[in-house]
Length: 239
Image (tube, rainbow, N blue to C red; front, side):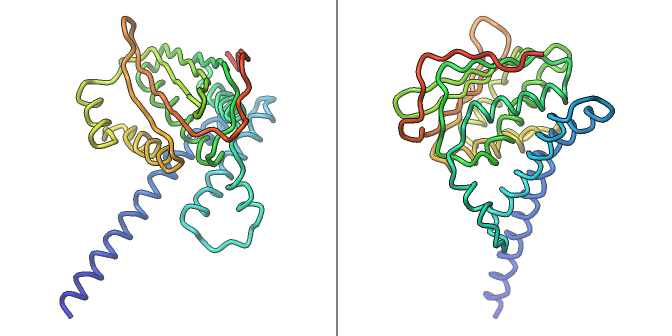
């Protein structure tokens, strides 16, 4: 009986820990679209309002799917199986970030457009979290560049900033423990980024830029077959 009670207690502890981690992740992910909504109040920005609402809805849909809560919504299931268009994901995230942080310069370059084997609802907060981290590293003069490229098998998303970069300790923790815990809470975002990308068969790498100030995050995700379009260069949403 004591063994059964101990097992039950351990199971309940794990369940409570999982719920706590889920709550932290939801709070972390929902801050950005809410910030964009707040800044759009009183302005003629119906597009930003719509994008923010859609992203909040996506976070909720992804939560339902991830934790397999009861749902008869076949549309939600269909969306989860659709390939994600990375050009759209990056463009919409930048629009929301420009509304949330109007003094931050965010540009993107699409060298190869691509669709990947991943859920769009999960990728939106990933790009958002990485931009948040870049802004936190240089809040007064952030200059962030997102480059979308691809090789024969994977889409490559490179996010560069001009912040303080990663400390050697942080880089070691990211390689060994796959997360960085910080008082500001950014570790929650990075841990979620790594976990989600890996669940789609991708990888995340972290570097400091050479000869200039800043950090680089490189994400790779498996391409959907025949989704790559070569030799396209597009600049998106520079405020």
